[in-house]
Amino acid sequence: MKIQSLEDLNAIRRTYAKQIYAPEGIRINIGMASCGIAAGARAALNRAQEAFRGNATIQIRQTGCIGFCEQEPLVEILAADKPRIMYKKIQEDKIVEVIEGYLAGDFKTHKKWILGQMKDPRSLLEDEIENPLAAIRPVDGIPFMEEAPFYSAQIKVAMRNCGYIDPDRIEEYFARKGYVAFLQALKKNNPQEIIETIKASGLRGRGGGGFPTGIKWATCAKHHGNRYIICNADEGDPGAYMDRSVLEGDPHSVIEGMLIAALGIGSSQGYIYVRNEYPLAVKRLVTAIKQAKSYGLLGENIAGTDFSFNINISTGAGAFVCGESTALMASLEGKVGRPRAKYVHTVEKGFRESPSNLNNVETYANVPAIMLKGADWYTSMGTARSKGTKVFSLVGKINNTGLVEVPMGISLRDIIFKIGGGIPKKKKFKAVQTGGPSGGCIPEQFLDLPVDFDELAKVGSIMGSGGMIVMDQDTCMVDLARYFVDFLKDESCGQCNPCREGLKQMLKILTDICQGNGKEGDIELLEEIGAMMQKFSLCGLGTSAPNPVLTSILYFRDEYEAHIQDKKCPAGVCKPLFHYEIDADACTGCGVCAKKCPQGAVSGEKKKAHSIDQGKCIKCGICYEGCKFDAIRIC
Image (cartoon, rainbow, N blue to C red; front, side, top):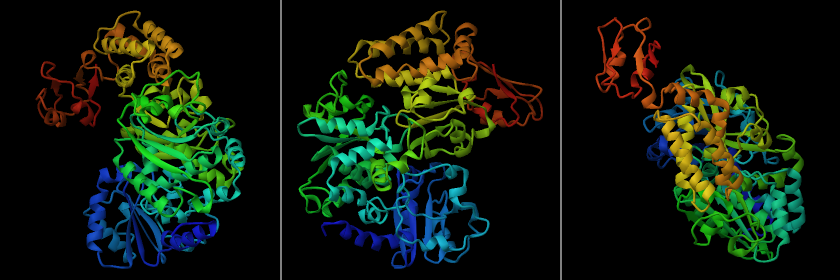
């Protein structure tokens, strides 16, 4: 059917809401985003479908990522007469046993696989449908997920539906008030009101630049011509996967955000530029667009009005620089993805020399929530100049890897040690890099820094798209800077001298330092090149590329000096600058290191101190990681 009004949408919404909130039988949600599939979720889903084929009381559904990637595959089971339970690390060989245990009401046998029980799974946008599950008596001894450290500080706005709905079923998006904000705005037909609401919300672009979204929309709307709505889904930062997860788990939130933007700006054509390396995101976007068209929510004369809007998908070839707005639009036109000077703004002359509004996935996903709940609701979260929430991919040397959506202004300490669970193996925190490969490295002294656009900039870093890489005591900051510069050198378009030559020279100097060939004056030269790049590079890639080098010099200059002056790598990463030795006083002679050494470089009698043959040692670190007595030293 074609939806013609809010009444049509609400009729469908109420029907499908029951399936999500209070199914008549048993509903099993299996996390089938890329993280879950990589952990074995597809095999678990296939096994469950095979085991319960023909049982009409059991619905087996796929969902997106609920954020706790460390515990994948995640399986949620709910029924009208039982608690809503989330199970963790459920592989193919466990899923049938867990489901049968749930059906029997046996929660004790499988307690070790239970992540928690859900208090109230309703969307933060829902305020009409009563949820009978909320009244069910909880199971004693099983914690609520909402109260667990990983989730207690989170507020899901952009990711409000991820992990709760089947992304391939538009009706489940309807059930959580999907497309209500768009149809309300369409009925009012007041573009200026849309723009003023987004302005008042304080929403800033979540793609890295942090430009006020409402001002961008208003500026684009002022210019005449065929206006375009473009979604930047070219997420290229190493370790970042926020946009991918939203597209895989809730693609309709992005489509609805683009529709609302199109209403506000006066556009009839949209494009989603997504990485070709995100095949599942592309697949679910294609399905979502087809479904929206089938209900008349995309296409010509939407809901019987004179408003028309279509969306096309364009896949990029994986060039990091195409995350920059002008390079992205050039690629979208079929040209080489190279940035251009910013004196002509894309809101005036962008794609096809026409007014173009570009925001990233997370920005658009926020828009329907803001339109439904209001600007005041959104501004109640965050800081004075950074409103709302931000999704971060928390990766690296951290116990709880995953996606976290937190209010702006939360401290780095709370993210890393409360939500993230701290550093594995009781090792010491060293630094955190925010903002991807062009972000800065923030040391321990700034752990209480509130996370927002301005505060991160004060210490030499950036918000970026939301990558957050945690480093421990075993990270060499010089080698880390070398790694990111190497990545950026390959990804630079090479169009301007400061970026092209600056990165090349930086990489040579950093490589020499890591190989023991550093010399006096190298640190100062790196600082000089970095300052030049920041001032004269053509685009944001070049101006931000020196950040990891300059901040690591600023906060960890002693490591650079140790590499250059002492020819030592304190972290034991740069192989030419360290070796392993066994502390005879600490060694118990357990023999574990000797058994694990692939080169046979460790020898010694049982219960007596061992030694390492430096001629055979390849410095692989297996002995160092495997010693339980801290007897192996980096020298």
